[in-house]
Length: 75
Image 1 (cartoon, rainbow, N blue to C red):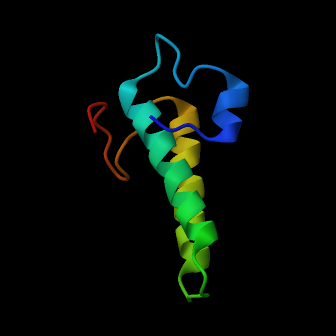
Image 2 (image 1 turned 120 degrees about the vertical axis):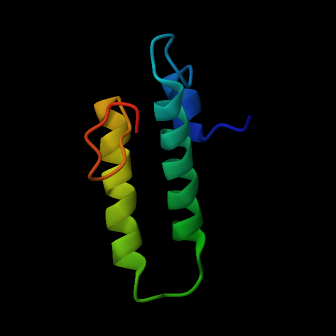
């Protein structure tokens, strides 16, 4: 698995008690942010994409990913 420079500085990618969904969500958010930053053109929805990635990042920081609008702990 490839790791970013920031991940290498922080040490291990996951802790033993971290939910694997959180790990995958963090990885996906980082990957999408890199791809968005590397996109050469401007597009109208860039700010929306950045807001959604920020929301996903906050969800991952909370420790338990959930689908929007879903109250069930399994989603």
